[in-house]
Image 1 (cartoon, rainbow, N blue to C red):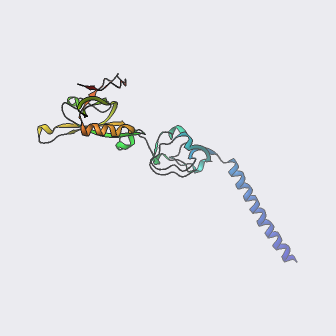
Image 2: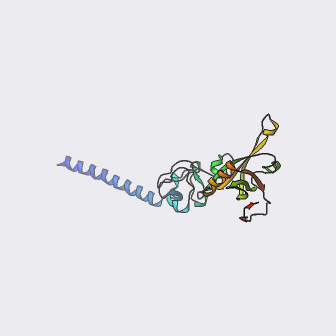
Image 3: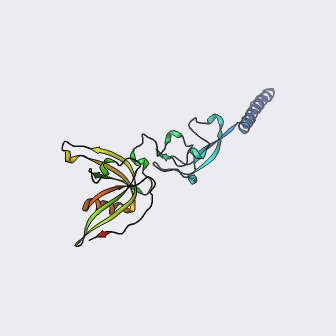
Length: 219
């Protein structure tokens, strides 16, 4: 009988200690400092521009805070994912990239619904080499339409994103490759004009952003 009482006492002490430890742990968790961390609301695929509706802010224990996490949504919105991010996963800065970052490829700087097209120019069609990155140009072309030769403006106010010299041993082969951003719905039109017509670029003034849609000219 005494042995049973002793066992019961030992068990009660162990249970009491367990309950006490559990209560202490609960109190610690309840009182533990928390911080705000930006997480994904749902899975965000690779190469996605993060929008406000893709993320939310949740509370995490401060001791679990990753040094590359942030609690400010403005640090995340507008950046591009380098890899997929799962739902409820904290968004770390190493998994994002800025579209304007200098060491990015050209594809990171192309806006949505645009395409980059490279145009081979010479001294005349390339405005004597005065076109630089950041300039705006129009594409002009002379195209055979039926029995008439038509001069027309193919596209206006295109941004130049790359300019590279294309020199050869032949002096007549010297020229410049000018890469411009074209709205995706006009890519086929521009490609046709560059392939079938005699084209040239017209350099715009830095203060001229007007879209005139000039009438084609034929004689």
